[in-house]
Length: 164
Image 1: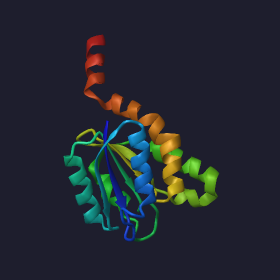
Image 2 (image 1 turned 90 degrees about the vertical axis):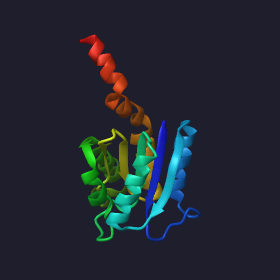
Image 3 (image 1 turned 60 degrees about the vertical axis):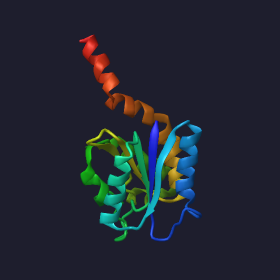
Image 4 (image 1 turned 30 degrees about the vertical axis):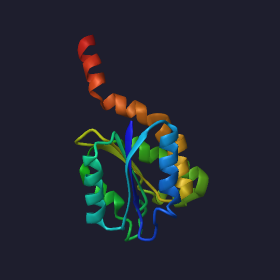
């Protein structure tokens, strides 16, 4: 499994991007290969450009962290949503439910999302805080991403084709 990380932040650098580093460490521990890791400003066009660049490295999974709230500077969701051909609403619903349990009603302002782009690359957009990234990775992403990729894969289509 190959992955790419995009951290969306006006202030972080690779040296202090704890969330990006955490994502990288968790996936490397799961024996995945990191193809790309960039930090991009909270700018809709720059986020889309970074995402499209990441797409071209041909990862199985792209994970963005940061810019998923409701502040005016939070433009990750409007940047990425039009690039996803299939959304998986259950991810955002479950993330908000888990966040609500942890931090109360503040967790409801998260617009965390998951889906596939037209290249069938699994994409996650999660908040930028270390706590939110840890929650998303441990409770939702790491336990489920392989299943989602398999459901979308050619191998499954082939198996299904042979069964019918």
